[in-house]
Amino acid sequence: MKQIKTKQLEWGWLVYGVILLSILLGACAKPTAQIALVEPVIEKSGYEKFDLKNCETPLGDLHEPVAEYFNVKQEITITDQATLVASGASYQLSANEKENLASQIEAAYQKEYAAAQTTLEEQQFVVPKDRAANFSISWRTQLYKSTLYFKVKGEAYTLEYQYSLTIPEIGERTIAICGG
Image (cartoon, rainbow, N blue to C red; front, side, top):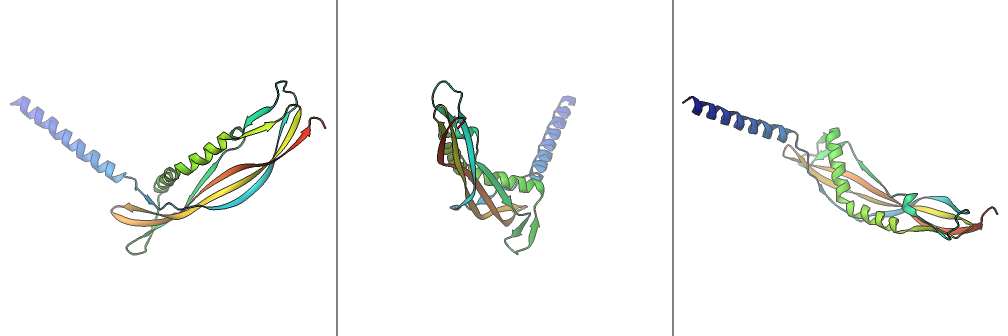
């Protein structure tokens, strides 16, 4: 009889623990967003010169990966307030909600980022032996502006977002004699 009560008590605590855990996890649930993906607006956003020398290499042409010097930059901007779909009322996002939504936007555009990064990694700066080169680098920005939808405590909200990729592009190359 004593052993049966102990088993019932253990099961009772186990059920209580599972219920408590479910409540805690539900309270910490992060909103899952439905992100409206769009085509980017493309614009030139900058220009710079880049020098690379091959003056002391006895082996021949210098081949340097562009990705060793430049990278694709991504930026996510979302507002601090969302709009309740049913009434148009404002909802202040917590820092955690904003971070979570930003990471979901980043994941939604991972394919575009990976394609830009792969293209960059395939490019090389080439400088002939005993020469110095000056490369023109232009920056191209792909700007994606759209809306995402998410739920908090069963209520649907909408939020504007902006995702941008800034990609370096190699332009003209000017060659000079080393020391000249």
